Length: 369
Image (cartoon, rainbow, N blue to C red; front, side, top):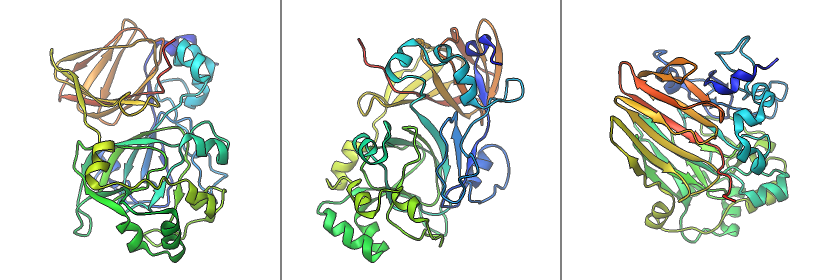
């Protein structure tokens, strides 16, 4: 049985590794202090997740659900949230979105290039997948490495002139070099951030370790029938059950130059404040979307955490410190995932050791009434 006090304290969440069609994950291991790290088919770690992974052929395995480590018996997060929706989500969120978190956050470490893919926007998701959520997302690059001598990059957005007919021809021919050439290839480095609206074609390149914040679905349309690593992809994992013709309609054929693509979708962070030993930098906010937000926080001394009656999810990227409220003192360190309930009282993060750096991600923003 849920304790009402649970929604007044920070929840420390489990590592939640998920099977995917590509390999990786060694970077996540190393980030968590496990060396040298292992390359496996579990290259993603889902953060504060109440979303089930879609893996045809593995339906009997309920993958993707996080657990709460600092509560008795380590219950599933989804069950804890259901015990006190208003306390965890806040009244405004419940009015706007119901008992749905509305966001999913992941760590992704790619040892091979991901297949070229696209995610549905809200209209396609509703009309074809009967879902109120699409899969608009954003990336924050945490680190990179060269693999097989290839510098890390992403493939991002159609070049000008790619029509639906041309894309269909390339897809039917399974001409992978032509697919890659149809997209912009962009070198990446730690600290870069990109917004990926539903409908924008993309692929994460080998050697990228990143955080992803997205709408809470696992809908991915893939145009490569065989992964770069040689895995033959299940048909439903390519088109999510809508068929290949409708899959092609998921793409937005509004190609642009590299300069224009980066101007529109490469994220330009904004410093919110940087005094008293703390720097808060906003990456994803209403300039890009109201579906979620993402900030990078650096705590050199202490940070008075703005609460505002909303749920928030943290990834502690580096360092060691303590999260203090009137009711608790919770040690935090690199590798921790935290959920701060809406009802949690005022809080402070204090550095205790190395500088604390974290990503703070918010669910959808309710419209002001």
